[in-house]
Amino acid sequence: MRYVFFFLLMYSAIASVHAESISKQMKELEHGTEKEIVIKVSQSKVLKAVLDKTTKGNGTLLLGDYSLLHIYDTHNDGYYYMDDVLNIELTDVTGNGFNELVISGVAVQTDEKEKIQGYFEIIYIFSFIEGKYKQIYKRSPIIIDLAK
Image (cartoon, rainbow, N blue to C red; front, side, top):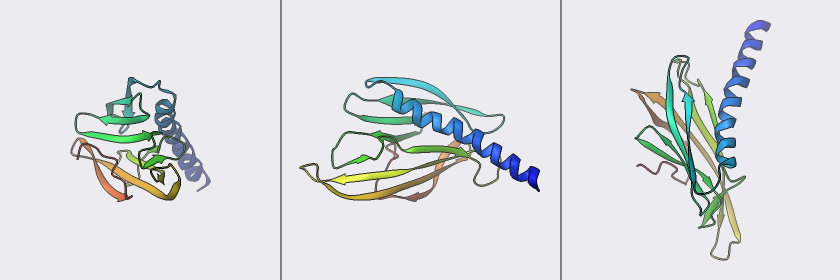
């Protein structure tokens, strides 16, 4: 039993390191640039993705040619993300052998004078279904999938 727990702990740590690197890469990306990355969907499948950060303080994660996720926001246009970028974890939540994209964070809502009006939690889960990441769970007043 101890070995199973240790294996799960190590697997979780490995997945988190890769996932943190997506958020970290977005945060470190220079404004006005983009960067191609690879997401490990499963042990045998990877997906090319693109991180893009605008000069105005917004940033997206493009998954294939079907999903554009707004994961970086420092531009105060009614709300912005606490810590600038949403947390992205890749982990097999469903146990089907494919890593889900678990995206979470906090949005700060502001008024026109940039005074904080409130905070909203953001939680999205995207599962790899039929060759694509599809949203299977959402708890957020903010839509992050700009392709919809």
